[in-house]
Length: 261
Image (cartoon, rainbow, N blue to C red; front, side, top):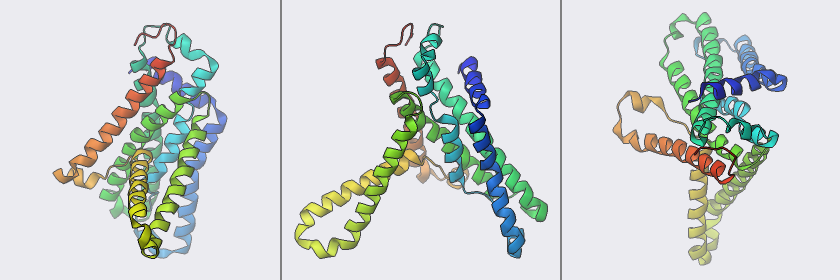
């Protein structure tokens, strides 16, 4: 990892007041929501009220949008490669900077939520659920950041958010189509030779999209040394590796001057 690239990425985020404001809201809004629940539901004081790990996607998106595309648009990426920095080092440094920062912010928010819950019920302080929640947030941050690095390598500026929205729209449409095929399959038995393969393709596409845009790992099977969970771990590692390799390939195709990879 290149420390200078990581530090520059973090400084750019800190200088963006809009992103900092959104980051603050991501921390405060769940606290306000759970406070209202505690005021109106006595039982809530006895449970650990934590935001689901999927909230880590929002932190990662906030940190990663335009992480490479902005430098491509501004032309500063060419200046970066005038130094003895390889494209592989650049991509992995950007990925680590975004992943690490998003994971820290996400886990920090979870710790605040957990401490408030523990204040009302001290027995929750060493909750395994809290530990699992934080670990899953970290996995999501590092996995989804790799996906965003690829999207940011494809386009310039902040257009990667538009590409992500396009994939999300396509995913939603295929999910609807898949549901229609499953519910109406009995009414179209004469077209079964067409509908069954189409349904299989739709289900496969939805499964791939779920794996790519929600790269999560459950920590309990890992702690239990459940080797049946090994394929999920390998899939996660393969996703991150393929995304980073794809980003390196895409940047190599752009043929930046002085790029040494």
